Length: 265
Length: 237
Ligand SMILES: Nc1ncnc2c1ncn2[C@@H]1O[C@H](COP(=O)(O)OP(=O)(O)OP(=O)(O)O)[C@@H](O)[C@H]1O
Ligand SMILES: [Mg+2]
Image (cartoon, rainbow over all chains, first blue to last red):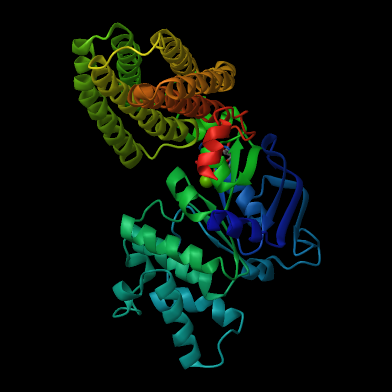
């Protein structure tokens, strides 16, 4: 009998969401991303792994033009979202970031109430017709961020007054509130306990049915658990990109193998 | 992969399990030789020893599995490490089965010492056992050296064992037809030969694990199978 899950994986071939071609990123003269081409599928969780400083965050930030905010940063090459070049002059970065949401490596709640942190995006993009609808979006988002129960009685308290792990989940709630098509998550669980981590991973899996998720993680087990595709970065290069099961049982490149098995490479 | 883990305790864990496999391998090699020798020399004491030693082999298999499960739980092995852990579990299972077959041969050897000898079949059986034992030695050598080529060679040699079995099978059939008083003894001898042929399959299984360990994929093409006599086919159909 054929393994059902193998059959399912084969059927799971998804449409292309983001196509990056020959992307180079420079910080001043330092070459941080070297000729990276990758195809990110819709309705798929893609994990970026690799040693600290290899360029995961840098590449992730290219996908919603977050690098525009860094003066010395220069991006070359092409990145297509649904076939459209996101670096085209016609593209409004603010609109782009509503479509391609992001959760940062360090939690960065706005200095506003918990409620307003989540309501901010839906308000500026006009996603709610009235207060009741906005309340609903806020609650749903906080639930998805696995933090509703902890904050439902103090929605007016400042978001900055939460613990580090709670702040990170608040940022996740904020990021999903605008229903982005692509969600970029940079180490979303590094400050979370195992329960909250499991809840966030469950959320990621749930988001996968409608969106494309790209997650940077230092936890090999997290990458293996949540993703269908894994990309291994090393010194600014994309060394290996493949089906997650293959990467974790039989990687092709010896640098990938050394890294995921915890060997000195 | 020659490099060591950053966490040296991980290397120690994996080495410890593989040392258990090698210990088990040595015991199983001895069991094959001794069982065949007990049969040939009609040595009941040696046969008893083989039967007694099987318990230790079984216990080692249990230990290998416990250690492998512990490594999975505590270290979440991936890639080559994961394949190592999976392969030790399979190899220990193969070795345990070979130990069981040796024990069964020893049991039948004891029964056969109570009967008059049937022609001179023991040397042929011993040669067959020797062929399997050499395959096992090479398979374990291939395992330790991560030598997929040697493992492939072992895998192909199983056909010779199958041929030896077919030859013995025909011989036993002739003896049984010659004189019905040979039937009981020949049935035991046939089961012994069949046991050795099955041992060859388990050694092949070990060789295949070596190939999986080194290359990440199991060999796909089916080996030439020569263990089906027309008489057996008749029985199965
Ligand atoms: N704002 C910046 N200005 C200058 N150099 C930067 C900047 N951000 C990153 N870099 C450099 O670019 C390279 C890649 O950094 P990046 O933050 O993308 O790595 P990373 O893979 O996300 O690492 P980590 O796992 O530690 O988060 C590093 O050498 C880093 O020093
Ligand atoms: Mg980073």
